[in-house]
Length: 311
Image (cartoon, rainbow, N blue to C red; front, side, top):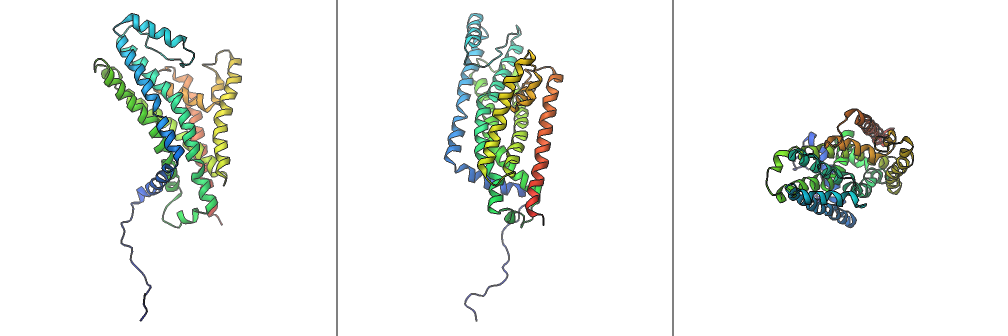
């Protein structure tokens, strides 16, 4: 009689639902990424601007009943070269002024401090997600299980989406709650109740194209450092190209060259979402560009994911 009789052993675990198989990939990737010391530090730093913007909203709300203080605040913002363009609500109607100022503050948070944080966080996480699997032949492990390409792609994308939400969506929602709680009265909620919905919309338009492009770079090479360089280069080169070519059209704000810059294209769409940009016709080319970029990157991603399994 053998000491240890090997044979078939029934698996006693609970199988995951087919719909949620991507969540297993996402959960594992999120936990592995969190082990990075630099990622944890970036996550902490990305929340610091919320404090500064909260102080601004507190000062603005308290200046509504004091025209002199409000005029001083407007002059300070306009003359300070370190503060990006910020609409302080020049409308005589208090409700409209609040909507303008709060929307402008949220747009400012998305376009500058959180976008810089996004650039580094995604550049730290995304390059290794697919290139690492290609280099280690982990595709054999993934697709030996009953998962499909879409499960794999959604799982990898959800890793990036999670950390993007942690540095963009949650800080913006926290800023809204902080600003409302510091206001002299809660009537501000009646005028700005739609801001959280706009935050979610702006977050989606940020997450989908950026994640698709970052993972696309990761799928095109086995060396994660090349994917990271490509990710940073597309932002820097687009910004430089816009900065050089936009003044040639006479109006940098409405320049057609904004489509060359990922930052400015996203910014125009987010400005429309927050109600800062009212002309939909001017924003439509940027929306179409982001849809095309997202669709093209996703299509290429699915092809690259399938290529290692082809015989």
